Amino acid sequence: MFDSAVALPQKKLGEMLVEAALLTPEQRDRAVEEARRLQRRLGKYLVDERLVSAEDLATTLSLQLNLPLIDLKRHPMQPEALSLVPEGYAREHELIPIDVVGDALVVVMADPANIQVLEDLKARAKMAIQPAVGIPSDIREAINRNYRATGEIVEQISRVTPPLTEPAVEEALTPGLLAQTPIVRTVDLLIAQAVRDRASDIHLEPQEGRLRVRYRIDGILHDMQTLPLSVHPPLVSRLKVLAGMNIAERRRPQDGQFSIQGEGKDVDFRVATSDSAHGEMVVLRVLDKSLSLFTLTELGFLPDALERYSQMLRTPFGMVLVGGPTGCGKTTTLYASVNRLDRKGRNIVTIEDPIEYQFEDINQIQVNPQADITFAGGLRSIMRLDPDVILVGEVRDSETARMATQAALTGHLVLSSIHANDAVGVLFRLLDLGVEPFFISSAVVGAVSQRMVRRVCPHCRSLSEAPVEEQLAYEEEIGERPEQLYYGAGCNFCANTGYLGRTAVFEVLVLGEELRRLLLKGASSGEMKARAISEGMITMRRDGMLKVRQGITTPYEVIRNTFSIA
Image (cartoon, rainbow, N blue to C red; front, side):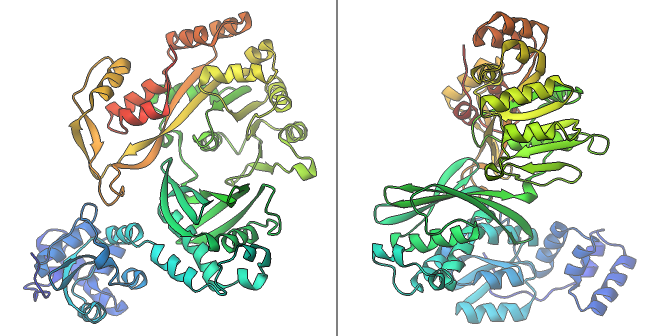
């Protein structure tokens, strides 16, 4: 399948690029001269200067050196091969070992003509090297996906001294023990792996005889590692130190936060602890700032829903509420909404707990109960700051609900989140919080409800036969019964799950005159929902099935995350 050595090229790289009409002779000559002057390889120079795409360069290298071009999106990685080359070396030289064939190690390289690296690999692996060509960006992504921190974490824990074998060690934790490099390194590795895996949460859960580590990825919890229970106390204490929490307090729940910068990203972490039967469990919410600023279209609003929601945001005053359970993306939608507003000519003030992402030209206030800054109290003070738009992180109690309603009635646009099952349920949640129907009908412009569903992996998706129950669910909403739908077959990009990333499904309710009348009359939620649908509201389940039609998600995901009320 592979040649044991790199074949001597019959033609120079620049000459082949010219023959392929990827470069003009003049561009080639200038590039060769500049690459020589800068002491850089010609291929890297061409890609860095955007004269040739990385894909075209890899294809040409494959032809020039008579080596296979490997698609790392689909090619499986063998753990035995990965163990032969350290991660740091792989990153430094843009290569990844993928398989052991006979007595040779197969290595995908951005620059397979680098004889020095090939000889070094041969010495490290103590076997022959069979090089192949890969696209540099694919190689970097493959390194991130396949080099796991698991082995190094186990190694770091084994270095912790003294051995943590007695339960009494929890009482004897000292700053010196917490500062040990193995403990610090273990926490760093757990966090770095979570960021690479796109995890939204890290769970450290003490069980009987073991410490369970789980990451929430695309809304689903995955077991990542099992550690000795003896290492639990210093790990928790290290996280408490980072988050500014009291390491001596182990019975009462605590929360804190910290920030790190790594791999070119600024990442914030919210930390919460609570005592359990086998010790303190810790959950870290991962807030990757590089993923914070989405547009409404990128969040998953279909054109009709986007127009209805944009209409709400264009109103000069009133209240717009985003409903859904914890973790469904309400805050992200609110941030995308604020980002759409005029921040130059309007005074936009927020009251949040916590401030997850910071914006330019927006005044953000952090809830601080110790300083008597609550949502309700903060709203009261904001009203004296001449605001045009007020974002309230969450309406969670009667006082905040009433204050937000009054702010909307006195000429302000109020945006907030609230826990409710669907868009109509948002209105009934306000009623539960003691807001009078008259004030709701006068203040509320509209409501949105949303859920998150996993996206079909774009790298391995294909039309496949749909299960009967999914066909029926799709038919119920769309009116046609498909035999085939898009599913992910599983690949390296999606860790063989068939899903990669998430999108939202929405239900957008515009409160028109008839709905206001029904609310004042005390109509049931079923009556109001039926009326809203007759006025053009698309339910979350239908919105999800429309995304199924586009190949974005699957009926299973829509069914799993939404429900239908007759």
